[in-house]
Length: 116
Image 1 (tube, rainbow, N blue to C red):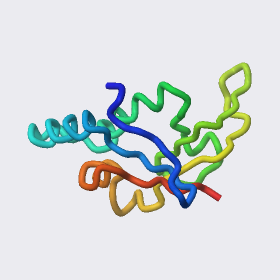
Image 2: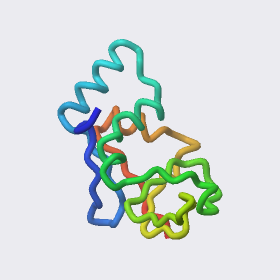
Image 3: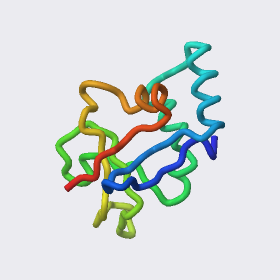
C-alpha cells in the first residue's frame, strides 16, 4: 500500500499527513464496505512513509506519558535496536477525544503536533 499518504511539515512545524488520490479511494472503498478499522487502517495507509525514513515510536521507548501515536524521521538506535536519541517527533494530543484516522478520512489530512 505505498503512495496512499504523504508526510510533510506544515508552516507551523507540525507533521501533516495527507491522503493521495489513491489513498482517498482506499478510504472510500473501506468505508463503503464498513471495513474502516481506525488506527489499523491508518497505519496501513502510512506504510509508504514508514518504509521510507519515518518511524512509529512506542511512547514508552522515549518516556512519553501518552498513548498517542508518535512519528519521527530522526531516530537513532544502538546496535541492539534500542532508541538512543530522537530528534523532532510528532504526536496527536487529542487522541483521547478523536482519532487521527477519523480526521484523515473526513478531511483528507491530519495534523500531528510537534512535541516540545
